[in-house]
Image (cartoon, rainbow, N blue to C red):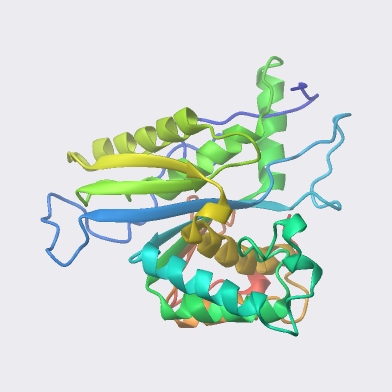
Length: 315
Protein backbone atom coordinates (compact mmCIF):
# COMPACT_ATOMS: atom_id res chain seq x y z
CA UNK A 1 0.00 0.00 0.00
CA UNK A 2 1.24 3.47 -0.82
CA UNK A 3 2.38 6.04 1.72
CA UNK A 4 0.68 9.43 1.72
CA UNK A 5 2.07 12.92 2.06
CA UNK A 6 0.56 13.71 5.42
CA UNK A 7 -0.89 10.58 7.23
CA UNK A 8 -1.33 9.68 10.98
CA UNK A 9 -1.00 7.14 13.95
CA UNK A 10 -3.06 4.61 15.83
CA UNK A 11 -2.08 4.50 19.49
CA UNK A 12 -2.61 0.94 20.69
CA UNK A 13 -3.43 2.11 24.21
CA UNK A 14 -5.85 4.85 23.22
CA UNK A 15 -9.58 4.57 22.75
CA UNK A 16 -9.63 7.29 20.10
CA UNK A 17 -7.63 7.84 16.98
CA UNK A 18 -5.65 11.03 16.82
CA UNK A 19 -3.27 10.59 19.72
CA UNK A 20 -5.78 11.17 22.52
CA UNK A 21 -4.64 9.36 25.63
CA UNK A 22 -6.80 6.61 27.09
CA UNK A 23 -9.71 7.92 29.14
CA UNK A 24 -12.14 5.26 30.26
CA UNK A 25 -15.71 5.80 29.06
CA UNK A 26 -18.63 5.05 31.35
CA UNK A 27 -19.16 1.33 31.80
CA UNK A 28 -22.71 0.07 31.32
CA UNK A 29 -22.57 -2.31 34.25
CA UNK A 30 -20.75 -2.56 37.54
CA UNK A 31 -18.04 -5.12 36.92
CA UNK A 32 -16.32 -7.22 39.51
CA UNK A 33 -16.05 -10.80 40.64
CA UNK A 34 -19.79 -11.27 40.32
CA UNK A 35 -21.33 -14.71 39.93
CA UNK A 36 -23.09 -15.21 36.63
CA UNK A 37 -26.74 -16.02 37.32
CA UNK A 38 -28.16 -19.38 36.32
CA UNK A 39 -30.59 -17.65 33.97
CA UNK A 40 -27.73 -16.49 31.76
CA UNK A 41 -26.81 -18.86 28.94
CA UNK A 42 -23.54 -20.76 29.36
CA UNK A 43 -22.53 -19.87 25.79
CA UNK A 44 -22.97 -16.37 24.43
CA UNK A 45 -23.47 -16.04 20.69
CA UNK A 46 -22.02 -12.87 19.18
CA UNK A 47 -22.26 -11.98 15.50
CA UNK A 48 -20.12 -9.19 14.05
CA UNK A 49 -20.24 -7.35 10.73
CA UNK A 50 -19.28 -3.94 9.34
CA UNK A 51 -20.81 -1.13 7.30
CA UNK A 52 -19.11 1.49 5.20
CA UNK A 53 -15.46 1.12 4.32
CA UNK A 54 -12.08 2.17 5.63
CA UNK A 55 -10.96 3.75 2.35
CA UNK A 56 -9.54 7.28 2.59
CA UNK A 57 -7.64 7.72 -0.69
CA UNK A 58 -7.83 6.62 -4.31
CA UNK A 59 -4.89 4.93 -6.02
CA UNK A 60 -3.29 8.33 -6.65
CA UNK A 61 -3.44 9.42 -3.03
CA UNK A 62 -6.40 11.77 -3.50
CA UNK A 63 -8.86 11.96 -0.60
CA UNK A 64 -12.20 10.51 -1.71
CA UNK A 65 -14.16 10.35 1.57
CA UNK A 66 -17.86 10.90 0.91
CA UNK A 67 -17.58 10.55 -2.85
CA UNK A 68 -19.61 8.01 -4.79
CA UNK A 69 -18.71 4.55 -3.55
CA UNK A 70 -16.76 5.78 -0.52
CA UNK A 71 -18.53 6.22 2.82
CA UNK A 72 -18.14 9.08 5.30
CA UNK A 73 -18.21 6.72 8.27
CA UNK A 74 -17.01 3.25 9.13
CA UNK A 75 -18.82 1.19 11.73
CA UNK A 76 -18.80 -2.30 13.20
CA UNK A 77 -21.87 -3.86 14.79
CA UNK A 78 -22.44 -6.78 17.13
CA UNK A 79 -25.63 -8.73 17.74
CA UNK A 80 -25.90 -10.73 20.96
CA UNK A 81 -28.55 -13.28 19.97
CA UNK A 82 -30.28 -15.55 22.48
CA UNK A 83 -31.57 -18.20 20.06
CA UNK A 84 -29.70 -18.06 16.73
CA UNK A 85 -31.06 -21.42 15.55
CA UNK A 86 -34.68 -20.31 15.95
CA UNK A 87 -33.85 -17.08 14.15
CA UNK A 88 -32.31 -19.04 11.29
CA UNK A 89 -35.47 -21.15 11.04
CA UNK A 90 -37.71 -18.08 10.83
CA UNK A 91 -35.59 -16.35 8.19
CA UNK A 92 -35.38 -19.53 6.13
CA UNK A 93 -39.16 -19.84 6.37
CA UNK A 94 -39.62 -16.26 5.23
CA UNK A 95 -37.36 -16.84 2.25
CA UNK A 96 -39.37 -19.88 1.22
CA UNK A 97 -42.60 -17.87 1.39
CA UNK A 98 -41.12 -15.05 -0.66
CA UNK A 99 -39.77 -17.39 -3.33
CA UNK A 100 -43.29 -18.76 -3.75
CA UNK A 101 -44.91 -15.31 -3.85
CA UNK A 102 -46.17 -14.60 -7.40
CA UNK A 103 -45.65 -10.85 -6.91
CA UNK A 104 -42.03 -11.12 -5.75
CA UNK A 105 -40.43 -14.23 -7.15
CA UNK A 106 -39.83 -12.67 -10.58
CA UNK A 107 -37.77 -9.76 -9.21
CA UNK A 108 -34.12 -9.73 -10.26
CA UNK A 109 -32.96 -10.17 -6.64
CA UNK A 110 -34.53 -13.64 -6.67
CA UNK A 111 -32.72 -14.92 -9.71
CA UNK A 112 -30.61 -17.88 -8.63
CA UNK A 113 -27.62 -16.74 -10.70
CA UNK A 114 -27.42 -13.48 -8.72
CA UNK A 115 -27.19 -15.28 -5.36
CA UNK A 116 -28.85 -12.38 -3.55
CA UNK A 117 -32.23 -12.54 -1.79
CA UNK A 118 -32.79 -16.05 -3.11
CA UNK A 119 -29.84 -17.19 -0.97
CA UNK A 120 -29.71 -14.82 2.01
CA UNK A 121 -31.06 -11.48 3.21
CA UNK A 122 -28.92 -8.41 2.58
CA UNK A 123 -30.55 -5.07 3.31
CA UNK A 124 -28.71 -3.15 0.59
CA UNK A 125 -30.12 -5.26 -2.25
CA UNK A 126 -33.35 -6.70 -0.81
CA UNK A 127 -36.58 -5.18 -2.20
CA UNK A 128 -38.41 -2.89 0.20
CA UNK A 129 -41.27 -5.42 0.49
CA UNK A 130 -38.76 -7.97 1.76
CA UNK A 131 -37.03 -5.57 4.14
CA UNK A 132 -40.26 -4.90 6.03
CA UNK A 133 -40.80 -8.63 6.55
CA UNK A 134 -37.24 -9.20 7.74
CA UNK A 135 -37.50 -6.34 10.23
CA UNK A 136 -40.78 -7.76 11.55
CA UNK A 137 -39.04 -11.06 12.26
CA UNK A 138 -36.17 -9.25 13.97
CA UNK A 139 -38.61 -7.51 16.29
CA UNK A 140 -39.99 -10.90 17.37
CA UNK A 141 -36.62 -12.28 18.43
CA UNK A 142 -34.49 -11.53 21.47
CA UNK A 143 -31.18 -9.88 20.61
CA UNK A 144 -29.16 -6.84 21.61
CA UNK A 145 -27.32 -4.79 19.01
CA UNK A 146 -24.29 -2.61 19.70
CA UNK A 147 -22.26 -0.53 17.25
CA UNK A 148 -19.15 1.64 17.26
CA UNK A 149 -18.84 4.42 14.67
CA UNK A 150 -15.73 6.22 13.44
CA UNK A 151 -15.77 9.39 11.34
CA UNK A 152 -13.34 8.90 8.45
CA UNK A 153 -12.40 12.58 8.35
CA UNK A 154 -11.09 12.18 11.88
CA UNK A 155 -9.15 9.12 10.77
CA UNK A 156 -7.72 11.17 7.89
CA UNK A 157 -6.52 13.85 10.33
CA UNK A 158 -4.87 11.12 12.34
CA UNK A 159 -3.17 9.66 9.28
CA UNK A 160 -1.86 13.08 8.24
CA UNK A 161 -0.51 13.73 11.71
CA UNK A 162 1.12 10.32 11.82
CA UNK A 163 2.89 10.80 8.49
CA UNK A 164 4.33 14.08 9.70
CA UNK A 165 5.84 12.16 12.60
CA UNK A 166 6.81 9.04 10.67
CA UNK A 167 7.37 9.20 6.90
CA UNK A 168 7.41 5.38 6.73
CA UNK A 169 3.91 5.01 8.19
CA UNK A 170 1.35 3.56 5.76
CA UNK A 171 -2.32 3.58 6.59
CA UNK A 172 -4.13 0.27 6.15
CA UNK A 173 -7.88 -0.26 6.43
CA UNK A 174 -7.38 -3.31 8.66
CA UNK A 175 -5.85 -0.99 11.24
CA UNK A 176 -9.12 0.91 11.55
CA UNK A 177 -11.18 -2.29 11.65
CA UNK A 178 -9.09 -3.78 14.46
CA UNK A 179 -9.22 -0.56 16.47
CA UNK A 180 -13.03 -0.39 16.36
CA UNK A 181 -13.30 -4.11 17.08
CA UNK A 182 -11.27 -3.77 20.27
CA UNK A 183 -13.49 -0.89 21.40
CA UNK A 184 -16.61 -2.90 20.61
CA UNK A 185 -15.55 -6.03 22.54
CA UNK A 186 -13.69 -4.41 25.40
CA UNK A 187 -16.11 -5.35 28.20
CA UNK A 188 -17.97 -8.27 26.62
CA UNK A 189 -15.81 -11.36 27.01
CA UNK A 190 -15.42 -12.18 30.68
CA UNK A 191 -18.75 -12.97 32.38
CA UNK A 192 -19.95 -16.19 30.72
CA UNK A 193 -18.50 -19.68 30.53
CA UNK A 194 -17.93 -19.49 26.80
CA UNK A 195 -18.38 -17.21 23.82
CA UNK A 196 -18.86 -18.10 20.17
CA UNK A 197 -17.92 -15.04 18.13
CA UNK A 198 -18.95 -15.29 14.50
CA UNK A 199 -17.59 -12.55 12.27
CA UNK A 200 -18.34 -11.80 8.65
CA UNK A 201 -15.55 -12.63 6.23
CA UNK A 202 -14.46 -9.43 4.49
CA UNK A 203 -14.10 -10.16 0.79
CA UNK A 204 -11.74 -13.11 0.46
CA UNK A 205 -9.89 -12.40 3.70
CA UNK A 206 -10.76 -14.43 6.77
CA UNK A 207 -8.14 -12.72 8.97
CA UNK A 208 -8.95 -15.22 11.73
CA UNK A 209 -5.59 -14.82 13.46
CA UNK A 210 -5.78 -11.03 13.43
CA UNK A 211 -9.39 -11.11 14.62
CA UNK A 212 -8.49 -13.39 17.53
CA UNK A 213 -5.49 -11.20 18.40
CA UNK A 214 -7.73 -8.11 18.55
CA UNK A 215 -10.21 -9.99 20.76
CA UNK A 216 -7.49 -11.21 23.13
CA UNK A 217 -5.95 -7.76 23.43
CA UNK A 218 -9.35 -6.18 24.07
CA UNK A 219 -10.19 -8.64 26.84
CA UNK A 220 -6.70 -8.47 28.39
CA UNK A 221 -6.86 -4.66 28.54
CA UNK A 222 -10.26 -4.77 30.23
CA UNK A 223 -9.32 -7.42 32.80
CA UNK A 224 -6.14 -5.54 33.65
CA UNK A 225 -8.04 -2.26 34.00
CA UNK A 226 -10.67 -3.82 36.29
CA UNK A 227 -8.13 -6.03 38.10
CA UNK A 228 -10.22 -9.15 37.60
CA UNK A 229 -9.67 -12.53 36.01
CA UNK A 230 -11.71 -14.62 33.61
CA UNK A 231 -11.46 -18.20 32.37
CA UNK A 232 -14.09 -17.77 29.66
CA UNK A 233 -13.43 -19.74 26.50
CA UNK A 234 -13.71 -17.83 23.23
CA UNK A 235 -14.35 -19.56 19.92
CA UNK A 236 -13.73 -17.45 16.81
CA UNK A 237 -15.76 -18.47 13.77
CA UNK A 238 -15.32 -16.72 10.38
CA UNK A 239 -18.35 -17.07 8.12
CA UNK A 240 -20.12 -15.61 5.12
CA UNK A 241 -23.40 -13.84 5.76
CA UNK A 242 -25.23 -16.28 3.52
CA UNK A 243 -24.41 -19.06 6.00
CA UNK A 244 -25.33 -17.32 9.26
CA UNK A 245 -28.69 -15.72 10.04
CA UNK A 246 -27.03 -13.84 12.91
CA UNK A 247 -24.81 -11.97 10.46
CA UNK A 248 -27.89 -11.04 8.44
CA UNK A 249 -29.36 -9.52 11.62
CA UNK A 250 -26.26 -7.38 12.08
CA UNK A 251 -26.38 -6.37 8.43
CA UNK A 252 -29.96 -5.16 8.75
CA UNK A 253 -29.24 -3.22 11.94
CA UNK A 254 -26.14 -1.62 10.44
CA UNK A 255 -27.99 -0.70 7.27
CA UNK A 256 -30.66 1.11 9.29
CA UNK A 257 -27.99 2.91 11.32
CA UNK A 258 -25.86 3.80 8.31
CA UNK A 259 -28.82 5.48 6.58
CA UNK A 260 -29.05 7.95 9.46
CA UNK A 261 -25.30 8.62 9.60
CA UNK A 262 -24.65 8.95 5.88
CA UNK A 263 -27.89 10.71 4.87
CA UNK A 264 -29.15 12.66 7.90
CA UNK A 265 -30.78 15.35 5.74
CA UNK A 266 -32.93 12.86 3.87
CA UNK A 267 -36.55 12.73 5.01
CA UNK A 268 -37.37 9.40 6.62
CA UNK A 269 -33.75 8.29 6.93
CA UNK A 270 -34.56 6.91 10.39
CA UNK A 271 -37.75 5.03 9.45
CA UNK A 272 -36.05 1.64 9.84
CA UNK A 273 -33.92 2.56 12.84
CA UNK A 274 -36.62 3.99 15.09
CA UNK A 275 -38.62 0.75 15.52
CA UNK A 276 -35.41 -1.02 16.58
CA UNK A 277 -34.79 1.61 19.24
CA UNK A 278 -38.40 1.49 20.44
CA UNK A 279 -38.39 -2.31 20.69
CA UNK A 280 -35.18 -2.27 22.72
CA UNK A 281 -33.21 -4.18 20.10
CA UNK A 282 -30.43 -1.59 20.06
CA UNK A 283 -28.54 -1.54 23.35
CA UNK A 284 -25.80 0.95 22.60
CA UNK A 285 -24.32 3.00 19.77
CA UNK A 286 -20.96 4.69 20.38
CA UNK A 287 -20.03 7.69 18.25
CA UNK A 288 -16.30 7.85 18.92
CA UNK A 289 -15.74 11.26 17.37
CA UNK A 290 -18.53 13.35 18.88
CA UNK A 291 -16.32 14.61 21.68
CA UNK A 292 -18.20 17.80 22.51
CA UNK A 293 -19.14 16.47 25.97
CA UNK A 294 -16.51 13.82 26.64
CA UNK A 295 -13.26 12.74 24.99
CA UNK A 296 -14.41 9.11 24.74
CA UNK A 297 -17.33 10.07 22.48
CA UNK A 298 -21.12 10.08 22.67
CA UNK A 299 -23.17 7.12 23.89
CA UNK A 300 -26.69 6.50 22.54
CA UNK A 301 -29.20 4.19 24.22
CA UNK A 302 -32.94 3.54 24.15
CA UNK A 303 -33.44 6.41 26.61
CA UNK A 304 -31.32 8.68 24.42
CA UNK A 305 -31.51 7.30 20.86
CA UNK A 306 -29.33 8.52 18.04
CA UNK A 307 -31.13 11.12 15.90
CA UNK A 308 -30.26 12.35 12.40
CA UNK A 309 -29.41 15.81 13.76
CA UNK A 310 -26.32 14.36 15.45
CA UNK A 311 -24.78 13.61 12.05
CA UNK A 312 -25.70 16.72 10.11
CA UNK A 313 -22.63 18.58 8.80
CA UNK A 314 -20.41 15.64 9.79
CA UNK A 315 -17.97 13.66 7.69
